[in-house]
Image (cartoon, rainbow, N blue to C red; front, side):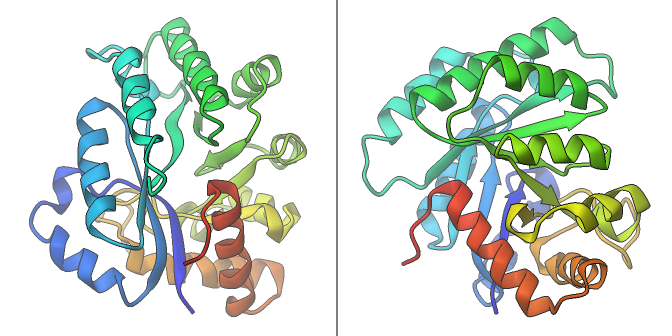
Length: 258
């Protein structure tokens, strides 16, 4: 069976040495991969990859750790306007956006960009990819005050099981990646979350699963380790996990199987 990697960053320089070789390898193991834009520069690159490879899709957004750089939501919106006129567009989401309290980025500026991207998601009827690092309560507050019509994915979700239930009730899918192989709180979240609300992701090139070193380069060939752990936690087969997470990915991104 083929995997669907719902979140990766193959435009990052860590892949400059062998990007094309990896993309060709993925043809044998992936039915889908969404490269996630974090700023205007990355938006151009991830679109190029999606145009070249049949199994690839992309999103565009401004990451909370990018808000102090020179970014323009007007230009982001212009890309959406132009791209979504194309019926064959492979633009499937807005993001990643959200809130990151791990580092000292201006909170109010993060919230401004987050809310503006929610507005775009609703205007263009797309799901949203949400980054919520040490900020789950504020993310929940923003999402309750600014409802996203198509919901989306809580990327690399690592909040409490109680908070995860709230996001699932709001219609969001939870992105599960390498951390599920290392951390008990993520494993507990997976245990209580219905399989029809879980998608798998790598967040490549970061957050590799065990048995790889924490700071080694991640890639989509490692999805099998994530699937194996989810299957173990839930007491189901790996094939069951692959089938359901792939269906979920197609559903949340609104992708029709070819």
